[in-house]
Image 1 (cartoon, rainbow, N blue to C red):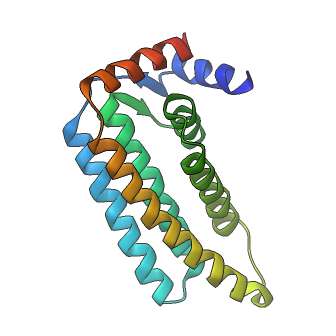
Image 2 (cartoon, rainbow, N blue to C red; image 1 turned 45 degrees about the vertical axis):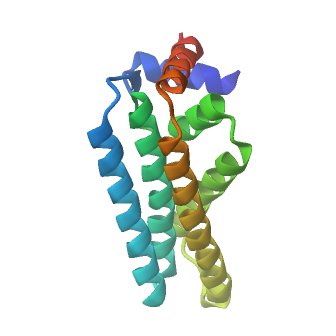
Image 3 (cartoon, rainbow, N blue to C red; image 1 turned 180 degrees about the vertical axis):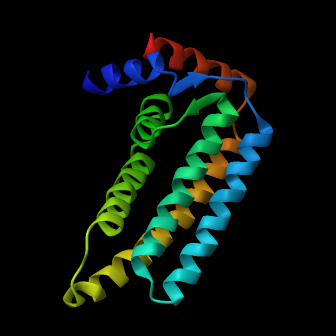
Length: 163
């Protein structure tokens, strides 16, 4: 209930809205996702784990935005995008992964860690990169399998959700 109230509030503010489905935006966000994954790997190799974690998360987030633009949904809020993914696609495993990744990114981006937990950071960062790769592949597959019927159904469900 709280999530639906949140989505409706964002809809009123124009932060989430139904837009024209866009192949160009879909493709642009997929390229952005792939570039974020490349950056995450480079940063990991350079032992910049906090930055790598952020880029791995943004790989996932941009691939999610790609899916939403393929459907014709604009979302300018991370939490709303994840909630929409959950409500409209009901893929609990992928929702769990991106939700975890979002928390990891916030934790690594905004909080300072001591040297004692650098090993944990390296391991969690490596896990994040692996999950980002998997998430990207699964989102590309989901996007490629979208029929016009499915797109219309998701759009209708979006309208019902935020009305």
